[in-house]
Image (cartoon, rainbow, N blue to C red):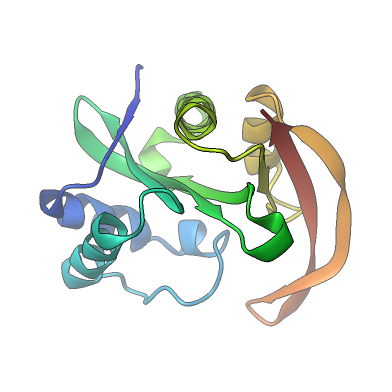
Length: 167
């Protein structure tokens, strides 16, 4: 199954809402997303991504046959980390385990490195999320260490793993 990344379209809001109204996905993301996630929530997110500074926010729909099945983004950090970006991503559960996210990570990193002065992209998956860790490893990211007691999610204190890819 071939995937592509592309800029968001407001018409993707329904697909975005369908993917994010899944507790299994939200349990692996940072807090702050509404649950259930509505089409209006999706439209608001898409509008914000389209309005963001394209040199700081690299946000894409992950698509199969031009249908949005997930989201990926790399977000420029500040101050002394201004040439570093943090990556985040997810795809709809029906598409898990098919190599799609690994390909989307590769495409996004290639784009960010080619179109900006970013020299390091990192991601911090929860340590228990072995599938996300594997995505990063298959995309060429290096494991840099475990950040112990680094997050509180659903009332649990969690470790996170640090992965990075250099230009």
